[in-house]
Length: 271
Image (tube, rainbow, N blue to C red; front, side, top):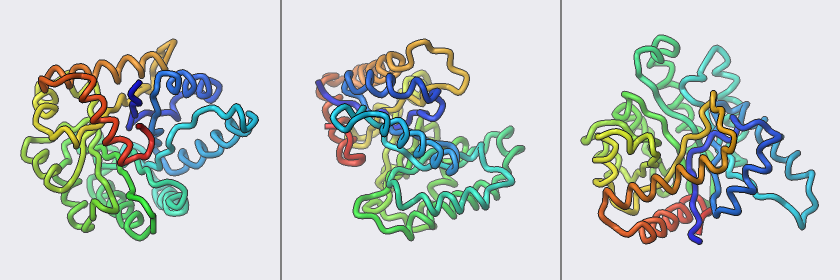
């Protein structure tokens, strides 16, 4: 069984009592998740929750654990941004997975958090990552709605070296020129069923080099009522990779193996 990695999963939206059974079911299916968070303080809470969950089991029966990702989502930037950025800086030494971070320039999001504020927060996040020593690259999951150019500009402004910082644009929805620029900058895209539900998304899924593709579910939705979230993740990942293979005209098993190899190289999780 080829292992799969869900590079963008909102594990913190799963009620704590359901987390252990969820990760065990996913492990049984050969799936690991990268647990994106939406605030730095949320990451710290999730760390504590996971220490408690894992500490409840003898070492011989340790359940599987997700990869915890330190995020500051643009929707969640508020009056406490300075405090959250301090928490972000303090937590950086404990993970090399960063997300969900980014920019959202949709009109209703700009009304809540102005572009200048979003840009300042993302710039400071990138600077903090640059100044943190790690023996392996930081892998970023970037949200960019109507702002791919601005996000790419910030990566260039901060002189991001992809040997040290790997940008992954989650559910990429920019222009073709922006996608080309991302590929030239050494970036990746993580693909979901939602992305493949659009004409633009399907076109991009065929244009991106095979070695720059990753999988994601972006599950669960904050309002999800799924009775079996593990099966929802499993079905979503397999649907995505099978549709990717169909669109690209390649064998699904071979594409799955290649994406798994890419995931293993970046995240050290899948085989």
